[in-house]
Image (cartoon, rainbow, N blue to C red; front, top):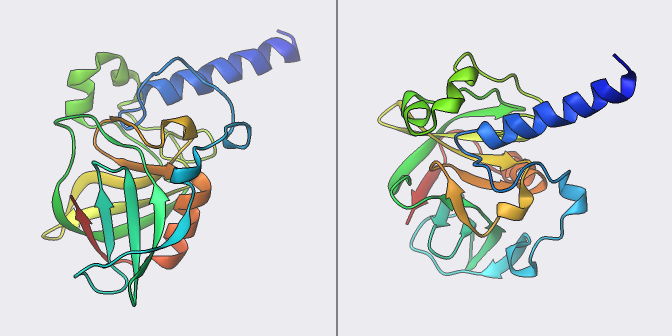
Length: 193
């Protein structure tokens, strides 16, 4: 097999893995890296005026507006554009960051496999790395000391920011999840509205 055929097969496999992810649905196949996608200006990371009853250091995810706010206090927050879960597949309420991971691995949940049987091929998990559906970083949401199976994570499909397409996870561009990861310690309160 030629090197060109191997490279094409690798690109195809990467695209299939991304489409098959529970947090990353198929919307037309693999489209390339985030550096080739222009993000709508309103979803670019920016410091904004934001009044909140939540203390500095908290995170508020507004699923209807498709924004995540990292509360800085004094009436300001860092705002990130996000992709959110499809109707009926979202986590609402309070959670805490119970774990953090760099280039996390991904394993579809049993409910994801029931909804999308083709995901059964990934039941053993997908190793972390640049082609993993969870992207560059993940912040794991916990309640009562237990993993909710919902995440704040990166995505290799930045064109989905601002949409409701995932199986419930909150996705950010890889650049934005790296920024959020660095400023967010374990134990941080996350409020999803």
